[in-house]
Amino acid sequence: MAKRLFLLTLTLIIGCVFVVRLGTGDEAASGGKTLVRNASMVLTMDPALGTLEDADVLIDGDRVAAVGKGLPASGARVIDGKGKIVMPGFVDLHTHLWQSLIRGCATDKELNGWLGGCVLPLQGSPVSGADAYAGARLSTLDAIATGVTTVTDWSHAFNPDFARGNLKALTDSKQRFVFAFMAGTAEWIAPEVRRVKKDVIDRNPLAHLQIGTHPAGWNVAGVEASERLAKELDVPLNVHLLESKADPATDQMGVLRRAGALRPGLLANHVVHATDAELDELAAHDVRIAHNPLSNMRLASGVAKVPDMKARNIKVGIGLDGGTNDTSDMFNDMRAAVGLQRAQSADPSRYPTPADVLRMATLGGAEALGLEHEIGSLTPGKKADLQVINAQALNFAPKVDWAAQLVFNTQPVNVQWVFVNGVALKKDGKVVGDTERVIADAQAAADRVRKYLGR
Image (cartoon, rainbow, N blue to C red):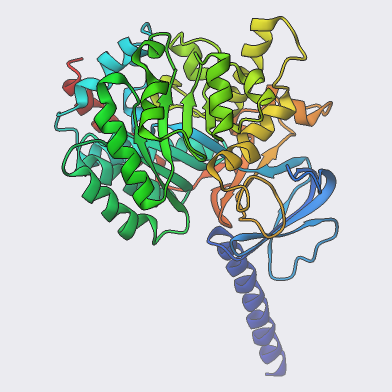
């Protein structure tokens, strides 16, 4: 009898220990504590901390609690960091998430030809909120897979339902996001944007709002209305600026000047065809720039003067730019940012270097959004937005210069874990979510959109 009682007690103790350990693991998937133990490299992007070897990163709740060696693991899910790199999550400074539905569209066209064939026909079409949700949800999972923890989504907002579906996909993704709501003079827009800010953005600690518009001589009223709304809501304006060789003739800079929109916090996407004087003006007004190298290559837009922007201390980050990128691979985007400048200048030391683009894709993007005190580096106290990368893979090994290899060798498959606000959105190499259902829904939506485009 005593033996049976002992065995029963031992079984209960083992069971309780198992439950506690299992509970800790589940807790790490939805917050709680997680410790990455003995990471071979911790790329903090914090100048005060630098790059550490054989170090730990402790997540407690939604924050980075500590970075260092021998951190206590009490109550934490432990991830073995041997052979792995821990770094901040990427900040995608410019994209259009719904455009996964038009991947591969008009690949032989420049910007205006692509817009005319793949985007503008959807104005006034019955493209729905369900379609927007399907495309944006696919893109969010794709972005998470490549280590993107913050996304800046410039939504075309073809109609109120479309904008709501787009925004719901962002909310469901559990990514940190900036929703750039395309505004204008339509009567429904301003009331809807006010509602969105009050009922959705302000209630979600992961959410931020911007107002999107397109400066051009034919859209003066729209830009002025957008700038008034942005100032009313105390949010930045987000514009496409000097992207194609045709844009300077539309008086984009003049329209922004007259609207009073050249002010600190304005986020300008592309800025490929700016003159030196225009770059001086943008710098003087603390305008931030989203560099989109893969998109600029695809649309034959040209090469942005990124070294000249750096010389003027303009805040510059990197964007994936939706359907004109055809990939959500931030590593590929960084490679393009380096390669474009080297190819144009025939100078391998030309800015940006691999270290420069790693900063642009993390802390630089955070600075451009005014979020550098929350994200962009593994500084204790900041939000726990980070990724764990497997460096012991066929495409990455052996170890030579891991910081350079992050840019030149890494692929999304190397990203093993992605945390946003302390929550694991990619675990052991698998994105959290029903990916098969998401892909099927996106295919159905793409089939509908293709009909609206007459393709």
